[in-house]
Length: 507
Image: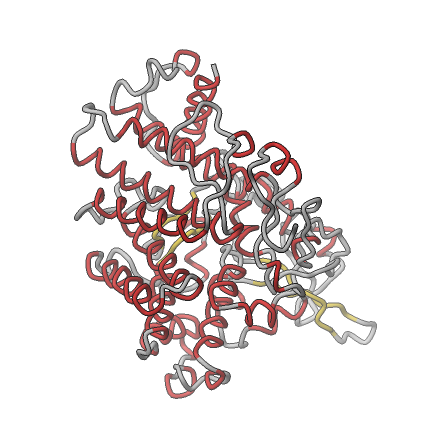
């Protein structure tokens, strides 16, 4: 009966996903069990959509939290709206086993088990054409590597499981964690299996909201750069990362994959699946909201709050946002951008106070990258934006990083990013690398600054600080204890699985 429930939940995910693909003719859920699943190509397609749906609906917010909330983007206390900081133990980096920030490994093992189940069936089926079977296997191996890469960066030693299980729960495995170096090797092996399965198929088969070979190669670059910098992979792994990014650029033309001319348009609700996107989590009005509605509930100010503040010119703020800011931003975040950088207006919105004389003063800012849409006749916006996991900007800045590690000149890739960012104001002799203010502070500082401005709110900043090294974590984040770079395991998971040992530093 547990397996039946597992299959049913996957198919339920497909129903939620159907509106971003052609809806499939499926057996009624009550009739779908492990015994009569896997009987035709539609069942495999449905299950793969279910895996993606689970990633969007259940896991995306936790991945965002793991990758960003411990960084210098977020306030350690209460923000300018006066609302409570509901993740203060995360943003202030005061995590403990009793206040772990995220429990049960973020629930990520559920979808890992679904992927394992899919692989066990797809590897042996004769119901699929060779091309379809290989594409599905490429997706599955790539996604499993993606999930485990998050776990590795967050907890280090984690339980590796590649076998499907009836009612898989990490707390019930009663097995110890696998050491991080072995987990990294398994991740690399899965990436290689994904590449082999995809073969020469670089297509985005069903749009940019399903995993593809380009997604695997971008993940490969990111994982190998982590291994290069943090796990003694050295220049050999950096070279592998560079080759993966060259592979993307060589086999996918700039007519299919490139920077869009306008930064904000990448995230526009009316421009979903555009040519900058490699892999995104699709949402749509009446289908799914960003982070299952939690973006609005955590990152968007109330309209009544905004009515007490002003624009920089002293005029009232007119925005039909209506949410809560329980993940408050640092007030000084707004000053991290140059005024000429279009990424400022495409990422943040400032609020000002105004005194009796009409003089305005900066108060704070809020996230403005994902703006949703206003349905016909509605008073407030619906935040049903796509959430990018990888885009072409990742390819360029990861390539610049790989070049820097290898001692090569990263100017070409950095300047492509800057040229788009500064638009008509761009002048290479004053804004191109290495001429912009701050470019003399070292290439790591340059890349971290560009990545902050480019990828804010895309779940990357904490991982970036970690990848570049402990000195940058301690310099920019609120972390005071260098022994707490990883996350603690929560009490319940430790109790359920006595074979686990607490993350070093939290014992």
